[in-house]
View (spheres, protein in one colour):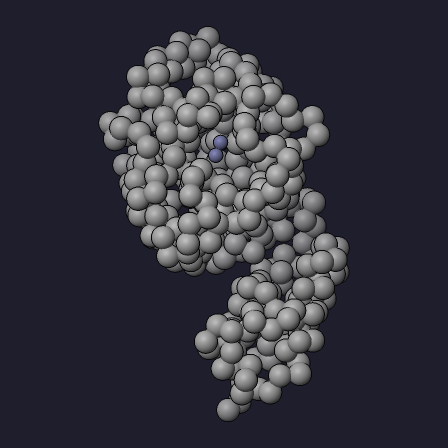
Length: 357
Ligand SMILES: [Zn+2]
Ligand SMILES: [Zn+2]
């Protein structure tokens, strides 16, 4: 049977493009090793293994390369290759700069009401200085006790406080109300519905059971993505790629110091398809130790038609300037500004979130 595409050639092409783009050597090597491992395989075995999902049993073949092969064999240009080709020849530095310049606010930030290190006022003033038009305040929900998550009562008090702070802030800037609400094990949200409906922006994140098995995690995420209160799916995989970066101090992110954590396992294509269907934005979390989702998943979310929010998840004023990191990763994946909800004005953003609930 004639193949529409040559998967080995596709893997080699990806390696070449990654290398030319000066990407990390280990990444280039992953595609070259996979190409080498698979080149020696009889065509029938390759097809069979791609079909029953056993390509990854071969030394040198990982999840990403196996998926590229499966797409190739199905006659499609692998998503990974398509996104690389789409960004080929563009000045990624200029693209990242343009994307950063297009951002008008930040949709995921913490204050000292939960596990941030600074008062709301200070976070807001730093955002004003950065040129933002708005800052969404998203302190944690009750279940996250280690982060002093806000009870319904404390959140109501915070809303009153934010109204007072807003009255004193410069014209043309405002704090939008919000929450980073825990996604509970059953996919429900850890805050009262009436409060969630009242908030301008709802970010939902998984902070527990990150090692749950694939089908359970997929169910949990599909359920929450369909929840009309949820606007943005936060740090999608929960991974930690490095310890706390230098200069990052303060009470924020307690327990996140000096450790790495694997991505949680779920059916990303199903979850992103649901995000596109329910118009739930996928967060590109800019924190250097998170870099979540990884680029291969940003590429898949983009292909699925998702919107994005490029957020800092800042726990201190200086961290509000970390959006650049998220923009660089978004640019590498070819995310256009018109898919990013925080390129909108505060009015457009709030119109969108309220229209969804
Ligand atoms: Zn979080
Ligand atoms: Zn957060």
